[in-house]
Image (cartoon, rainbow, N blue to C red; front, side, top):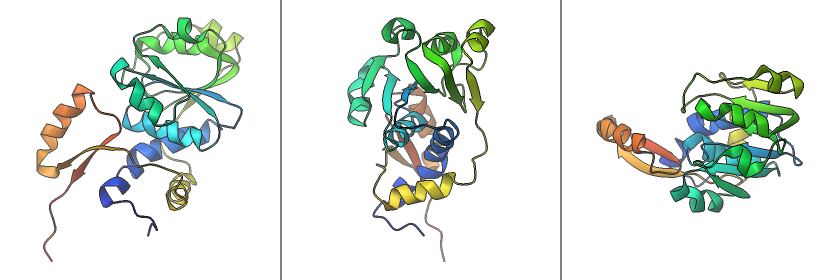
Length: 207
């Protein structure tokens, strides 16, 4: 049982996007003094990461499409940069303590350059492309930590429920579809015009 006023559709966003996000934030050991970069900040996981980082008191710099930058700022980002801009030129080298990234792709090398020495790069996905170029000199000379995340650590789900019950999270439902329109939902998802999560509602079950 979850004691809150969220709808079933809002609660449905938690086990997938927020669980993935909380696991990365948890493993990244985000603290109040950290400057955290979040690529893909308008997506379901990225928008959840922003909220979960902010509730820990850290500073969030988000990367998002130009059309979504205002919405991302309204969700709590301290700064937002256009995803079409060069991340190193925009932020400078050695400027971020942590990067929580589900994008990867061609931007990966630049992301490592903006990490401070001893920085942490945390990922559970690669929507921008799974094959990346890694300059090993950047990795070892800066003492970086690369942290992969798949299965959740034990406290993750209970942490999320406690945040909801204390009113520390905001549900981010971009759109709701009936389950029979799952193909429509997938087509619209691919357009990447939304911020937050799509939710599918199954038909009622007869008693």
